[in-house]
Image 1 (tube, rainbow, N blue to C red):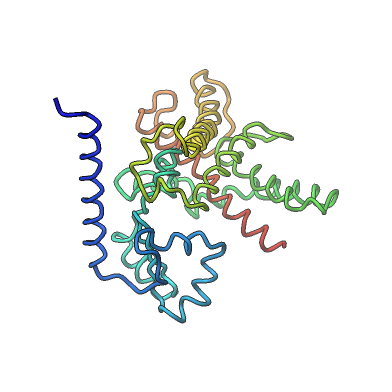
Image 2 (cartoon, helix red, strand yellow):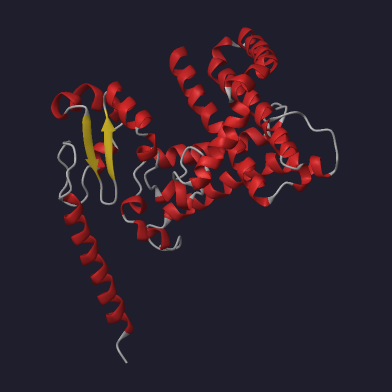
Length: 312
């Protein structure tokens, strides 16, 4: 019988050769110009540069134009550096450019492939966006004015007492609004749900901001956490646990109250559940509503970042 180690080595070698041939073929396809990279690893160093968007806008645009190409082992990133091109490519040709690049670490290992923002553009992604739009469209958003007003008053009271903690007050204000909007949840000091959501967001943001070799070499997703260099698997497992916790716990709280025929605070989740049968909502509707609600906090995080930058 053939030596299994020799057979395994031969298979691995065949895969590597096939992968290299694939890389050579794809490099022949026409791509925009960009900063030169390593012959194998590509532009990993450039991609890890802090504030690379600013660098692209100020320096790379002069060298390479409005379309800039960055390449790694498994991904090719095109930076669109012109408002006119953004409008042309991302709005007028949205049906062709709405997909998301593969991110094994965040989307597949941490479970963020269920997020509206990071979901592949397919029928389910369209359903998620439609679900969110049904409650967040302009006419519906006007009904949230009382929530905006009460939240603003609480923010101003806190700011007047401890103005030096304005960053925390901004975070708390955004969390209070989104948790109320999404789940009808009234947050308290050191709220465990808010902590769970923030922890999940931090894992996701760190995963997107750092280079992970599993993104360049997707087969590493099967590498054991106990092996040398397997720490990324432990981080991903904890990120997945945090992700599921913050998506499931607040949603299940609303769903349990509906099942027990209890009074439910009006919210994004409760309205959509009631419109789709309440406790008898289909499994598909429940799944769409749950992950749409969980995605609301992502939009709030971006708003908080902009407010923090403005205040600084």
